[in-house]
Image (cartoon, rainbow, N blue to C red):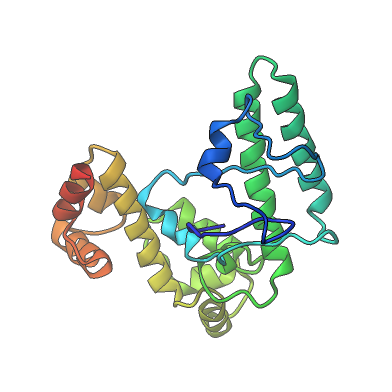
Length: 237
């Protein structure tokens, strides 16, 4: 799930209910037991996205993702689940670190399964990032966001004409290539202002702006805040 959501898991909805919090208080090691049967076993976990741009991914995902058994990723996910269970049961040195890494691998495989199994994915960042035709152009933008990329350069990387590339890019990403470049720069700026001690001038130059005022204007149009106010607000949280 990509957002908090109440749910009930039951074999009989008339059965007495137990909250997850109460169930977790009775756990033995990493496992909680409910009732006397072992007919059902569930693994739960979460992946935290560290910086303020987590909405870029979460906003592109549905409320939940169901991986069907016939998915090409199902066998890999099943292997990862079995490894998680083994780490929990054996409780060997390094089990916590191994379990964390296995959870991250599961997260990647779940994203891949969603991308591969969702042909009607809405235009946006995730669809663009997984599009093989746009991949060469996006690699150029992501590797050197401070460069003033010309439409012709990006189109050539994607082996398309300028007009075809511009139209295809907007259909897939939901915005024009130049707008995508600006948005990517602003995402990087948000992260830098939150995590680095970088001056406004240095950041402006890094992201391809000729002056502090040009960068500040673009940042405010994108976020609604000046870089200074964004940094002050972020550090006060």
